[in-house]
Length: 287
Image (cartoon, rainbow, N blue to C red):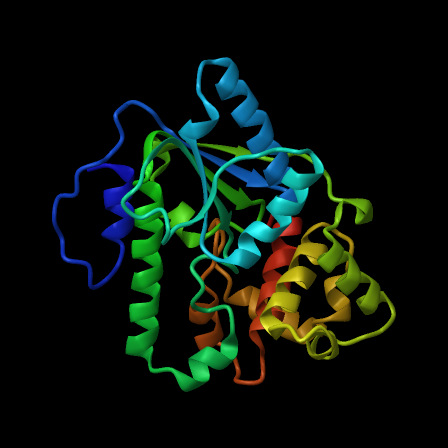
């Protein structure tokens, strides 16, 4: 059984069957890069493509796949800045196509799978429909994985790994974690603006309304800023709430499931508060 088969079989309602790998090199491991941010991930892609071209690959041998347009936007900005051209495709548009080398971007806990990101979803959608949505996201990730004929690169984020990446056994992949340090100057324009507004005393809900953005997106930006020490979690979560949330977060787990933690907590505690406590604990290397 190969890595893509294991990932797709993690779905609860997936029919168990043998799925053949499309990879022509059975000994080739998946390479996962946990970037500091999108700029770091984009630079990793540029460096990797240049090395592979030096080894004999052609520009037509590459695909860069993404789930949604908002996942690829920061990469496009960076690529345009450095005049770097690589075929960009949505995972849906790449179905039925293959490339020797495939990069999949946007593999963060808050982006892919896109199921638990908005707490309002949980309030209005039945659990069975949420399960179907999770399984659909898993199938899409499987499609992306199986586009690679020779090499597969997963671009995730440090401290914010997608559960789909976590589902791939370590025997099938090599993981590199970025050692770069995030500074205010390295922030993307969107996150830098949120950071500035928070420093001016704006609430997360106010920023979401001002930016006409999903509140969970702003919460994820705050999580990143907390993880890297640019914001203090004490400004967002009271001490007693912090202790309560931390009590229910498992130790030695790369990506805690937010919905499972939420079920154990009082109704008034938000997903944002859980995210921020997790971010702070990861900063302290406690999970």
